[in-house]
Structures are given as C-alpha cells and as structure tokens.
Length: 469
Image (cartoon, rainbow, N blue to C red; front, side):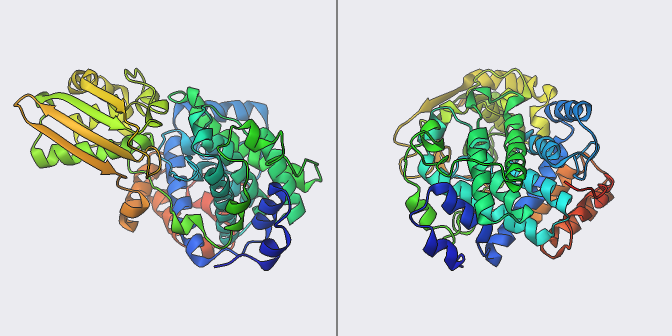
C-alpha cells in the first residue's frame, strides 16, 4: 500500500505544501482506504440529510439562495447551486447535529468538509464514485499529517480543527477531484492555509456547524483558484510566518508525518470514529457508561443522588456549557448528556429538542452532575476519549467505572447494519423512505458508480443540470 515513487523520492527536501500537494495529486489509494472512505461518505450523506432541516442549515440555504443563482451541485434540501455554495450549505448541514464522524489524530470531524467539498466539485465535473473516494482519502491523510504535528496544542489554544485543518483537507480533496497536478494542488493547499479559521468559543451555537461548511467552501474555492493559476507561497504551511506558526502548532516540523504518507494510511490503521450519539464526541464515553450502569444496576432517575465524572484536561475546554438552555448548548454539556442518558436510557436526535431538555427528570439531574479535570487521564490515550464515572444513589450504593472509548470507535466499530440503520433514520428526516433506501443502495456501491450525479435523483431532490464550472 505505497504511494507513487515520485512522491516519496523526489520531494523530501521541499516545503511542506509541495510534499503534501504531490501526495494528494499522485497517491495510489489502496482498496482498504477506499472502502473506509465509502462508509464515511454514506454516514456523512445521512447526517447531512438529517441536518439540512436544522435552523443553522436553513439560514445558510436562504442566504445562499438570495446571494447567487443555480449551479451544477446539489444542495441537500434546497435548490442546486455552484460548487462552493453547495459545499458551504452541505458542510454546514453535515455538522449541524454534531452527528458526523471524528478522527482522534486531527481532533476534528473530517468527513463533513471532505464529503461536502468532494461531492460539490464531483457533481460539477461529472466525477466517478471512485474519484470521489480517492479524493476523500487523500484529504483525510493530509489532515492526519497536520494533526499529528499540530495537536494537542492547536486544539487546546481554542482552534476548531474541523475548520482549520479541515480547510486544507477539503482543498486537497477538491483538487484531486478536479484532477489538478502536483503544482496546482500545492497552490491550492497554500491558498487554503490563508483561508483556515474556526474557534471553539463558538461551540454550542450555529457557528460551529457553519465552520464545517466554511472549511468545505474554502477548500473548493482554493482548488478552483489554483486551477486558474492563482499564486501562493509554497512556504504557506511551514514557513516562519506560515500556518503552523500562526495556528499555534505543537510542532513545527512536518517531515516525519509526511514521510509516512502513502506508507501508513491513517484511515486504515487509525480508523474513523462513527458517532452513535448526536453530541460532542467527548460526551460519548460517559453516555455509554451511564447507559450501561443504568441497565445493569436497575438505576431509576429519581434514585440518583449525584454523578461525578473525571475527564482529561482538554474536555472542559470543549464541553463548556454546564447549564445549557438550547439543544446546541446541550450537545456540548457533559452535565446535560449525562442527565439525559440516566433519565431516558438513550441519547438521540430528539434528546436535544426543547421537550427533552425540559423533562423534570433531566432538570433534576443536571445540577447533580459534576465534571472534574484529572491530569492523569489523557496521558496515554487521545484527549476526549477517557472518563471515570461515579454514580451515588439515594439507597446508599456507589457505582464507579472507568472507560476508554465508546461505541462507534474503531476498536468498538459500528456494524454495517448499525451504519445502515443510522443512515436510513437520518435520511428519512428529509426524504421519503423509498428515496432513502434508493440512496443507500447507490452509496453501497459508490466505487462502481460512473458518476456521482446519480445520487441526487435517488434522493428525489432533482438532478443538477450539467453546467461548466
């Protein structure tokens, strides 16, 4: 599973953007990586369909409709648009419910920007399903190389990796779908380095999903500009005033991470975490643990005296709402997610609706939850993946359990049946059951699809009229 020899042998002394651009343009993607990407595309289209009706996504759709005209790329839940606008709308929709997948190397949601950018450009140029999957993989691997060096400092300082690192990944994916050569792809990445932004302070608001959409849009824009000979510095990533320095990267040298590209495939070896709960991934170990304890010990919500949750020091920088008042805030509240898991025994899309948040059992439990940072956690495992949960009951019992990871993580991967069930449940929020099933059938064999344009008609959203980009 090695990349082309031209990448590994001829660019070792070149700036990072040149080496990353050469990899993205020339890498020979192995079948195992393409298979992982297919599952990610399926999951992302599903959550984007579910998210397309959310207020944040609807606002973006309305603004884009008023600001532009029709185009060749599908906007889920709205009229077709140009590639960059479609990428913005679909990337926002894919991230709107925080139900999209995670990568622990990048501390980001990789697929929302990658799929939104790749699909928008792919429809515009009539790319094949295999081309879209290959583009996803190279974008994912570019992000992994950056995340390996930049985190955890980059994330801890307040940057939203989905938006920052994700912008460069989306640019690599869009450039690959467009068929740009190594030089043009290098320029796309250098342009994207100046576009990248996104703040964790906006977690729990509509801006968080918007940042995923902006990463997709900016990646498409960077690739289209690069295709038309827009210039940029090849040192934009690792130069003395470049991306790594400005974005407070933990390290400054990408050489070792880039050397592994094409030799080790992060998407295969590290894997993708598929979310089975529509909330921040940092809540998932606790949700899993409390659901298990509730079932095993027969816990009744009214019998809970207190819940104490120890987490690694990064978690409190992400789960910033201890008394959430909206569903978006609830997704970034360990207090609320823990209370909901105990009150309902499940956490789903409806858990973050107003009726659930006002449930008397939940309102009683939220103030009984305490979150504490413990620097002994997160030393040997990625941030956001560990928790130590203690439940004190009114009958005098104390239940304690430590957990690493959660259902949906690569080591506890969701089954194909669970992935299909998630897709259909999400898609049916936007389209009829028959359309959801037809779309799933198409996505299952995406690699063999001669054109990604085949997806939109199956969703009964209307086929985008072929137009030049």
